Amino acid sequence: MNKLTFTKKDYSETSELAGLIRKIDTIDAEYVNRISDEIFNHQPFYLTVLLGYRVDISMEELEEMMRIYLLVWEYFGSNENLRKKKVTQTQFEKVQRRNMHMLHYSEGESEDPREKIYTDELQNLKSKALWTAVLFRYNSRSRLINMNPENKGLILIDILSFIQCFETI
Image (cartoon, rainbow, N blue to C red; front, side):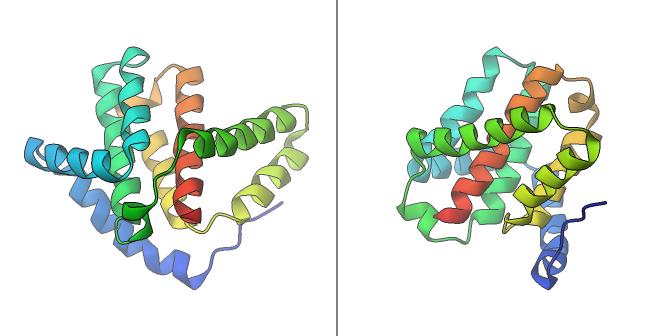
């Protein structure tokens, strides 16, 4: 069985992430407006992708997606480069295509090789603790559990792609 290797940094980030999760679970309209303006000023494409989900998912699902996007934003919030260098649509789509290719490639594999492909790909992720928190939230929030599987998968790829883009800024 293939396993991801977690570093001390990954483990130490879990308490930070727990605090961020508590924060996004208690947000109000003022916070959403303030952070939306901040994101629009620094990473407009990130906000555009989130708002683009409105046509494909329910308002309840969109609210949960917004919380996940805000968790990712808060996690990377101390990275000053995120405020200076914008993720472009081209950059995002390149990372997204690579992730989609990995998924399509792995579909033809049996369980063990597929797990190795995922493990190898995710081992390079610098923010494994964040990704773990995203996956947990994604698979434990009642509004998301019964979400259309295709939409759920595509949005999850988008979230992973943004995390990877933010890591390289």
